[in-house]
Image: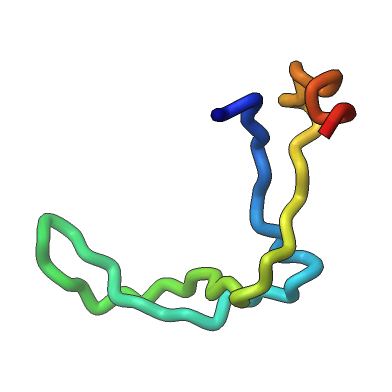
Length: 63
């Protein structure tokens, strides 16, 4: 039984995730010479709770 839903995001700041990944840019299904970096997330279960979306805080307080 689902009582409520929460909006959580991975906490990159605390987990110290970094832009260490690299990949080629694809344009019109073709790989280009351009390389872009991307965030490689650490496998940490560290989350930030989005308090703005807590429309059901009274339910969470009972849990």
